[in-house]
Image (tube, rainbow over all chains, first blue to last red):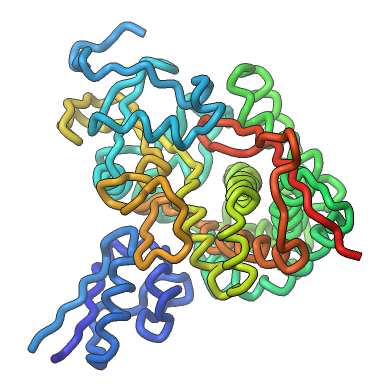
Length: 67
Length: 399
């Protein structure tokens, strides 16, 4: 299974709630906005990635899991 | 208020979140009771729509093209000019928000932790031996005020004056003249401070105002008025809000021994508890003005209508949150809207979170067990921002 984190950069407003849960997965830029737009992560990170996505007040993060 | 033609009389409610009697007892319960319709219309303060669902409130925050911040509070604020960037819409908002972002980003704020902890610990050490405290007077007001004064490089001795001005400005709904005169006093004061910063020293100073003096928008330095607009916005946004959140958080801790005991046993839970306090006691009730005729949240709105985007209504919406009216400090998911959403997301949110966590840590480390003082009930206020005016608690002092 591949796990991808997709970020709608237009929606990210720098709440940083994803990074508060998993700073290594959701890397922020100097201003506190998500630095990544589309990144593949190890599949054992899937549960944490999903929690991070759910924590976003803007709904800016999507997790794609492909077999 | 004469009702506009497009407002369905069946959606008109007797609703006054500023001074309604129920709001002065428990503003959150009063809001919860207003939740029946997806949107309704209040005739108070000239009339406005109220959205009650988290999904609608979030969407409205995210669409500044439809819902402008040109009027961001009900009634309109007492500031005679444009509060930057609060009262602006994109793309102007984007340009004026930029200079603030690096000053309040998570990294720079985290680096202030030791200093903030020292300030807070000093305050708690001051009242801990007494066995009794009004936590609003002894902690919730002086802690954020001291932090604000230090971040802006202002003299600490003037903190009490700031607290009074800010209180009059934000809460004197019964006295519009008092609000205006408080605004004038703040502007006069900030005028002088900004003039002094512009004249000298700005290059060597690390405070927020000096950083703004050095910054550029559209390739030119900010002018005097713009700097005062920023300073005023920081003044309004930075003092009263954290005070209010501390008031409600410590009210919860004083009345929920189970939560207190868990946090004392497991300090690592404090950050999550702070998020839950922010959700259950979201305090800010911002407004917007409709820019063009639109059907939204099932009702017909006209350009010029105002609408309330209450963050407590959003954060306590049972359609989005299980047991929304209960404080549960270890929720798996907690995407409350206490800091708003969209481009105006509270720029001070990272600082506010840190101050709240530090205050809970430092109090519980010294006073693990406290409760409301006998015969005392907390005194709360409602309106654009809910808050606590008095919270007297007692504890046993061990020798």
